Amino acid sequence: MQFYYLTGERICAGDAVLAGGKQAIVESVLLKHTNDARDFSCYETGGVLLVFQDGNLELWPYIDEDLELIRGNTGLSST
Image (tube, rainbow, N blue to C red; front, top):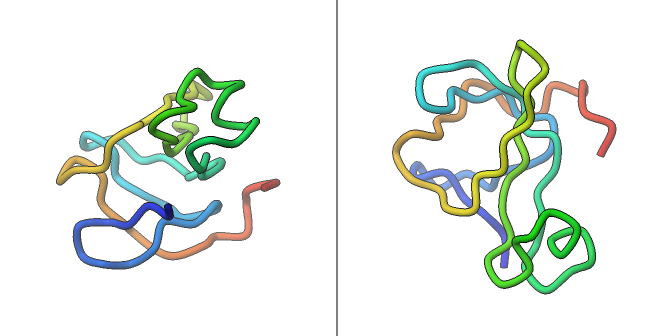
């Protein structure tokens, strides 16, 4: 299962986003039932790992109107 913004675009590593009104980059998309998802304790749901400008990482297991695409893959992510 892939993750999609409410506008229909697929969420990809490297996307620049607004998450709860703060700028972030999608570090990784963790698909459910994968080892990566298990490592981040979201094995059953998967999730989107975000890195914010202050360096904090947040896992978003559910996508709603609080996650908005600013621009597609920035090429800044290592995944």
